[in-house]
Amino acid sequence: MSRLFLFFKNKFSPVIEGSFWDLKTALICVLYCILVSMPNYTNFNESRLQKSNSYSILIENYRILNHQIDHPFDHHPAAENAHASKLDFRFVPALLARAIPSHDMLTRMLGLYIINNIAGFIFFMCILRLVFQYSGNRLLAALTALNFAVLYVGKSFFHDTLLWNDGIAFMFLALALLNRNSFLLSACLLLAFFTDERALFGGILAFVYCRLNEEDKPGKNLLSSAIPFLSAYVLYLVIRTYLKYRAGMDVPVGAQSGVSLFLRFHTGFPAWLSFAGALLAYKSTWVIIALSLWWMRKRKSDFLIYLFGLISVLVISVSVQDLTRSLAYAFIAVLTGFFLFYKKFNEQQRAKMEYKVFTIFIINLCIPTIQITYIRDFKIFPPVYKLIWPELHTL
Image 1 (tube, helix red, strand yellow):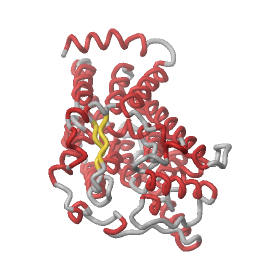
Image 2 (image 1 turned 120 degrees about the vertical axis):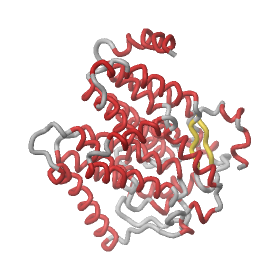
Image 3 (image 1 turned 90 degrees about the horizontal axis):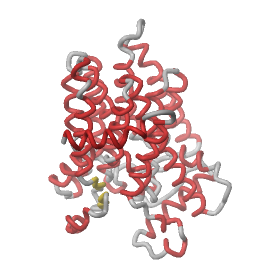
C-alpha cells in the first residue's frame, strides 16, 4: 500500500501545486462521479423517455416539478405514495430553476439537473476548503474530497436524473459549515431545510462541527454558538406553518405514503439488506464516524447533541422509502470524524495521516456504492458490479 501511496502522491502532486489547486481537484471529483454514475441522460429526451421502464414515475415527478417552478408556493396534488406528493415544502430547487430561460418541461428538467451538477462542484470545493482550513495540507484536503467522491453522497449530485435534488440540500449544508457570518449560516441552513426536510437532522450535525471549530475562540459558549442554528429552525417552523395554513401546502404522512416511523418493519424488507445498505452508504468511513463518538465522549453536551443527530438520521432512514438517500444527510459526521482524526494527533502522527486517509480511500474505492430503497429499487455504482452481483434486482 505504501508504494501505491507514493505513486499516487507523485502523480497527483502537479494537480495540488500552484494556483487553482482546489478547482482542479474538485473537477477531478466531479468527472469521476459522472463517469462512475453513468447518468441516464435519455430521461431528458422526449422520444426516449417514453420508452423508459420508469416513464410513469419520471413524468409524474417532472410534471409536478414543472408546475412547482411556475407556482412554488402552491399545493401540488399527487398520488399519496409518489415522491411528487412530498414536494410542497421542498421549493428551493424550483426557485433556482426559475432562472432557466424556457417553459418547456424537459428543458427545465435538464436545467435543474445541471444545477445539481453545479451544486456537486460547489460541494467538493467546500470539502476541500474545510479540510484545508484546519490542516493547511492540500493533499489531505484532496484525499478527503476523493473519499466523498467514492461514497453515495458524492455521486448523488450526478446520477440523479429523477431529480430528487438531495444534492442541492447537501451543497447548502456544506456552505453553512464554511460560513462564520451568523446571517449567512442561518440562510444556508434555511435553504437546505426547504430543499428537503431531512436536512433538519443534518443541521444538528453541522452545529456540532461548527462548535468543534470554534472551541479556541474566546466568548463562544453553547448558547452563542446555537443562536444562528436556532434562528434557522424557528424561522423554518414559522414559514412552514404559515404556508400550511395560508396556502394549503401539505405533505402526506403514514405507511401508505411511504413516511411512517420504522417503515422498514411494515414492508417485509430483509433486515440483512437494510444493514448492508447502511454499511455501504459510508463504507469504511463508518469507522471514522464511530471513532468521532469516542473522541468526543468527554465533551458531554456536544457528544449528546451529536449522538442525537446521528440517531435521528438512522431513525429517519428506516422510516421512509429511501434508505441510502436518507443516510446521506449524515455526511457531516464523516467531516467531523476526519477533523477529530487530525486534531487528536500530534505533529509527528499528523505527518502519517495522508497515508491513513489514502488507505481509507482505496478501501472505499474497491467497495461498490449501492442505493437502496424499501420498494426494492436498487442502483449500483459503478455498473460493472452488476456483472458480479446480477441477482441484486431480484432480491
